[in-house]
Each structure stands twice: as structure tokens, then as C-alpha cells.
Length: 335
Image (cartoon, rainbow, N blue to C red):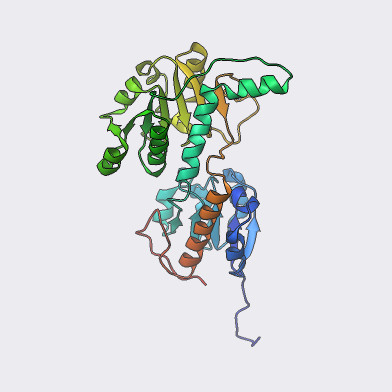
């Protein structure tokens, strides 16, 4: 090395999503082929853990880590790109990313099939008393409860995006009536699949035997399902949540489940992840909770992970990524 040349500095990438790391597939080879140094952690990370890892990384493939303004201030100016593995960015300070000129990438269209299937896993588990029956037989018993058919029941879908549409298609296959609410209405899809348009959420609440949540977490949707909305619903309604835990007010849901106003709650998400051992939803008999695995299938993980790596590579080379939350922020060549 000549006297005036700069020393070689390895590009460093922080990778925190566990399903990416735990699932085999071409995404591992694609990332390894870059020659970048990959720093691995087991997310989702809280703010303190995220703060401890940033400051010397050039790129970040994140899951549901808490990426606050404070985290971004420490990460910059070294950090050049955040590539979200998945579609939900409610744990990321998007406004600050845009203010700081930091491209924030994401992977839409990769997990809708998997999440829709998981929605029906939760619904069937509740309506057929799956956990009660499996627990009984494993304990050497033969206790039985009478369940319900899905046929001719009405499902209300809140959010008719990619996932909501897949839920609607599967609901129709079960012979169910489908009513949905979405600000951005796809009339062609609704007509093709027999989906009735609700004028507002109250219409969903009044009509639905099952309510399935597939909307983003925003200030408007936070605590949307609460003591204010439960009286508008059918007594004994089943509520399904494969969106975000904070859309449902936990304490209010617990009271509604205990009173019978809500007959059951099937959720893949909680307001605290992972939850404390004494989280009030974990012990109720009419609740089915899964640990945020609605999109964790080999097929979906490989699609999401590959898209997240491709996004990162494109942006780090100054090329247009597959999808960007803040497209007004230009990507700049780093390597």
C-alpha cells in the first residue's frame, strides 16, 4: 500500500431478523456474495439494544426493532440504508429517516398468502375448540366441546389490501359472507369475489360474526378495537388479529372476553413482544395467541429475505430499490 492511499474499510451490515437467519435459502448466499461483513443479532431489539449496535454500520436489514430518532442520530452519518424485512414500519421513525435523507426500503407483496392462511388457522382453532381438544387428549382424556361451522357466517375484513384480499378469497371458499372496509376500495376485486363494501367500521361491527384485522398501525387505528367499539359488535363475536397488537386495547379486550361480549380472540401479535409471563391475554381460555409467526413459512421467509437483500444491494450501489417507503429520498452509491 502506498503511503498516501487510504486503508481498506470493510462495509458492515447489521442483520437482526431471526427468521432470515434461521431459515435456509438463497438469501444467505446472496448476502454472503457481497463480501460485506455481516454483524448478527437476535431481534426484535428494544431501543437500548439497537443503540448499542449502531454507529459503525453502513447498512441495516431489520425486522421489528425499535429504530427511534435517537437510534438514527447515533447511526448517522455512517448508516446509508435501512432495508426492512417485511412491510410494517411502525417501529421505525419514518419521519426522521426522511428528514435525515436516509432511504428506508421494504418488501411488499411477499407474505400475503402466508398471513391469510394463518388467519384461518386462528379462526378454525377458536371455532373448533382446537386447544381444548388437543390438551384433553394429550392428558389422557376424551372431553369434547361442540364447535361451529364457518359456512354462511359473515366475516368483516378491516383493510382490504393484499392480505385482506387473500382472506376474502379463502372466506368465500368456505362459503362465508364477506363484508370489508377500506379507504382505498378495489371495486373490480370486490365484484369478482362477492365482497360487500361497508360504508364505515360501524357497519362491519354490526354485521360480522368474525372481525379480521388487516390494517396498518397508525394514530387513527391504535386502540381501534376497544371498550368504545365492543358494544357495536354482535355479542360473542370472534376477533382475529394478524396486523399489529396495538390496534387492540388489551385491557378492554380482556374485560370483553371475560364478560362474553367477545367470544374469542385469535391473535398473532401483542402490544408487547415478547410478552411478560403475566400478560393478561396468555391465560384466558377463549384466546389463541401465536408468537408473531403469521408470515414465517419457508416460502414467505425466503421471498421476504431475498427481497430485503436485493433492496439493500441495489441501494448501496446507487440503483433504484424494489420498494421504498420514502421514495423522495435519493439512494446514493456507497460501494
